[in-house]
Length: 148
Image (cartoon, rainbow, N blue to C red; front, side, top):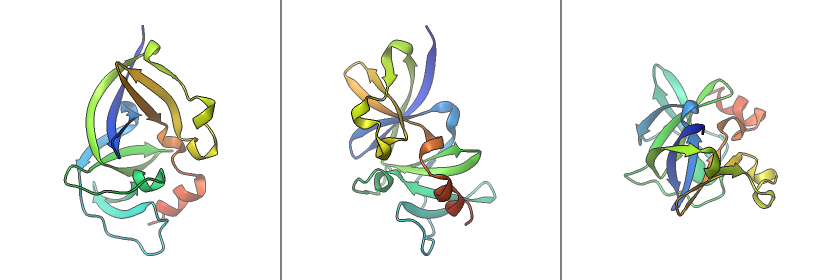
């Protein structure tokens, strides 16, 4: 039975995950420098490995209330070969997912607004939404934020 490792994180009390192969690093919260006229979900930019890393507030991107706190973390992921930072409420754990624990996204949540939800993970009594980082941003959004 094949397995996949994912990083589980919290957004407003709900569990989400990204494939560990898309994750470069997990950072503690760093206060970003705000960018004038950036899209509302761009929290700002931070210095990362001698370059500039755009920081996306996933709560705002997912149309949820944003709540920076001392547990906030930045998950640095690859998005179409570019590094971006995902601001999340907290990183929970790295877990193994077996084939029988995941399924494709149900039609009810796979519409246009949830195109970045890659699937649903059922782990014991938890439901975890799996995010496809390559679909988080449109080409236009990616071009905008990587031009900072």
